[in-house]
Image (cartoon, rainbow, N blue to C red; front, side):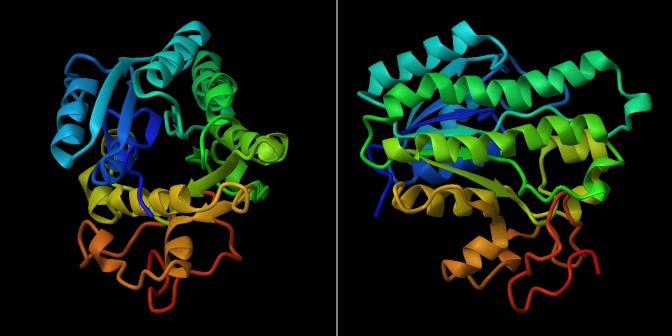
Length: 287
């Protein structure tokens, strides 16, 4: 089983989780469309579509850097069509692009909510809509959302209702599209981390370097995504997966390799259901 010759369209792939997923697929010799907004270096954010393309090529893949704002329907459609034309089809769509602001409603500007909704929920739907005609022709087509299980408890919403609504919108898309696209053989699944992941958002917006040390690297999500993509699309759809639990079910036993700093207790992520047990031997996150 391999992703050699497969074509992936990954939103937000210039850095972080999206880039890690791209690099994992590139090691098999996959074609990667890097769909992101950052074409020029940013003072606070590492990486552009061009530096990501260099890394993907060095890892063994074929890169196709594309400037894409998922809020622009016409650009989304054009970029997906360009990708399919360049590589002769499309096999996998990864909806990774996301906006975040962890504030209660009283402290959230409605323009910021609009941004989160347009990128997280609406952007995801736009990408799925325009990718579906190409995916339907693929041998083993997958759509993956980086979004949480639908565990609708008050505690997940109350601290930051606007963000929770926008993020869970991606998961609602999984629920609906898994059923809508199952007759066409297209798998639609969700993947979410048990712990915080060492990304620019964690460093710059949430917890700084201290929280980064208490996080896992994006590689854990990349490895989990890879396992999803190798699964038979017609038999594996509508799943809401937690990274380490899913990897443990696929035979992974060493989770220490994903820790940024093994001496620091891991910080739990939001939205992880209480009834999804951690792999044996991992211990409680955050203790």
